[in-house]
Image 1 (tube, rainbow, N blue to C red):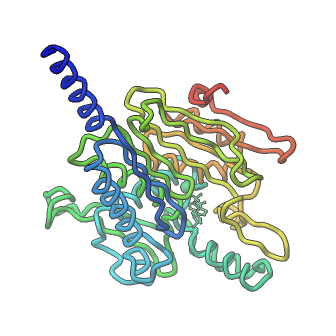
Image 2: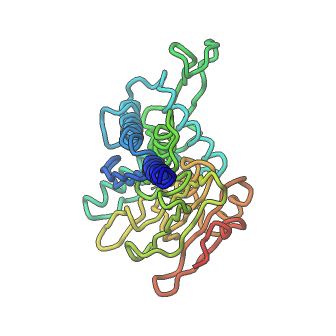
Image 3: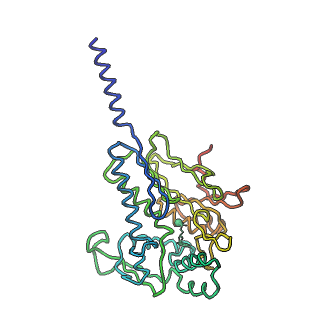
Length: 349
Ligand code: AMP
Ligand code: MG
């Protein structure tokens, strides 16, 4: 009798312990950075709300610093010619990565394309493509080599400490910067870091407008599956990707001309500009990149949209940890082009 009661209590105890320790998940989908987001945290129930709050705060903070849509962001103030030096450490780090991307891609990635971005947006609003004079004027302000970003050489303190070394930014009047091609990726990286800081989550995932980073495991204890969407059909998944390591870490970004584009006289133009021509880069319907960080994946996805399949794959093969998959062709006849290590992430279904 006593034995039965004791073992009964033990069973109840185990059941309660299971309920308390089995990871559950919580998801929020706020609209941030002008796009849809998905944030999921997996772990002990008490940790989930605070983890998701921290992640959202990180996304909003990046937006406040780097948004080109918010005239009061630090980047907008720089573009308006105010305080061109002594910039925030986080902005300096992202811009430094943007300049690194430019040198790696021979200028296919170029944060100074902003005058061209604005010109094409204006043209779309007016319903006609820009004329040669307008294009030439905008192009005269574009070129990543016009930007000088250095660390204040006289201050020995690291940039992360108050009063520490600062980034010094110099650029000519008329040069303007957009970090839209990498800021989302950076925001996702920082949101995942914020989610994890000070907590032991079983897993998590942050997705902002096509840029995704996950870690650990989903609530069912399996592994994260990341769908790659068709550039022609909203919601149609072409293939699914999975993390390769026990850490469950995976960073995936897709760039393409299907989500955001300009429409001028019934023709669609990509929001990605080829800095070499000043024209929208429309050759690649979509390119998906896997990289060690979401900012890196984001940068390469944009650059590869400009470079195209042949040049792009050649460069990616030289970049350690970066894999890419281009989708070209048509809806009824899609063609896939893979870098040498991409397919190992694809789930055979
Ligand atoms: P994404 O969606 O990450 O490919 O980023 C596209 C955004 O980056 C555009 O909306 C522009 O603001 C900006 N952009 C366009 N072309 C380029 C380029 N060649 N290099 C860097 N940024 C670009
Ligand atoms: Mg990008």
